[in-house]
Length: 460
Image (cartoon, rainbow, N blue to C red; front, side, top):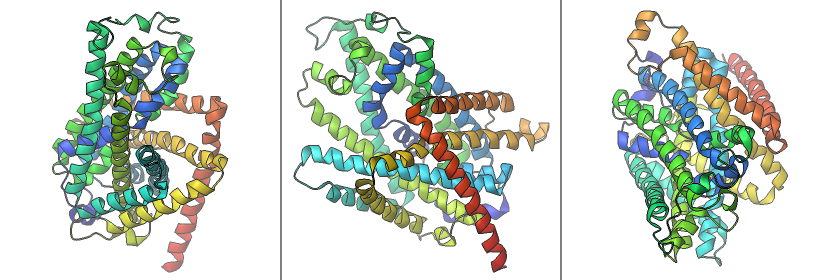
């Protein structure tokens, strides 16, 4: 049953998101520029065994989503895992988790907004990038102000372009592998998967080391939990979306990389341009680079759209809990938390300006927090689910509508895996800063939490 204290927020946010919207929102969040360009880095670490790493990562991501789904179907909340952390682990856990998620998404949004300006510069080199940045923030902000249904439709179509490109890429790649289409009739086969140092070309350690990069590729799918507060029928749409999205993401990542590494030797991928561009050019499509630039622009728009939605709903729910300023509880007649949308837009404009003027080393420290925050949110989801299960009797557990199979044991296995990922972050000097910065961030939030408590006590 839903808790009485949350019904006000529940009734004011409009339920306009269908299963179709929610599925593509999660796909859009998790399949971004990291697949189009970033996968080459993971390949360098693991070689062809990166396919196994994505399979392992996909299983863990699915466990995390099922743990979140168990709580979301039982008690649909717009603030999702922040609310569950508060309910099952305590107010401080909810406070830290909510603000950490908002900061993570804000950092990602800064990168996406900046990237949009860069991508538009490919076509319009004489137009200053700040004009594109301003335009996209105003455009996406306006769309988020209309209604959640309009937002969902835009996200559906933007994600559809991205997904369609990947599907075409996979089909075209299979044509090259089997029939040699676009390759002078010479079928490439799949021998490239083991002909250049073997499947585990960098050994088992190479595959294990790549897991940290792989897991961040799945970051973003937790937005499904946030949609629960505005889903038309969360008890139907959330289970459908959760059950379908992880294997689809897995298919896109594994399928795409399987095709790319079959056509090109893995140690040559990324050395002479994007493998997506090269594959389309092999088919005789001369404008491949322009087509891919268009797809990546839609990917950026999709990500910015989801980011503004996610932070807005999280801040609205946190304000209801007393963890954020009360002004964030304001809802328009169309059911939009308009203050949070405006604040997110303003912050993006300021942040993009800061992105240009602060030293790169400082921005690296801030960006590394997004890495830490992703793992933090996932760990809190699993810990919340464990605490949630422990609060139930056996009879209540048997009546759960969308239970995580294996319950607490399954969550503990996923938790141990995430601890291993944190160990990997600390192992590499380039990512170690994320642990230090993350620790400082948590200490600052704990300090802020106690200051907030004292202020509230004085006001009483």
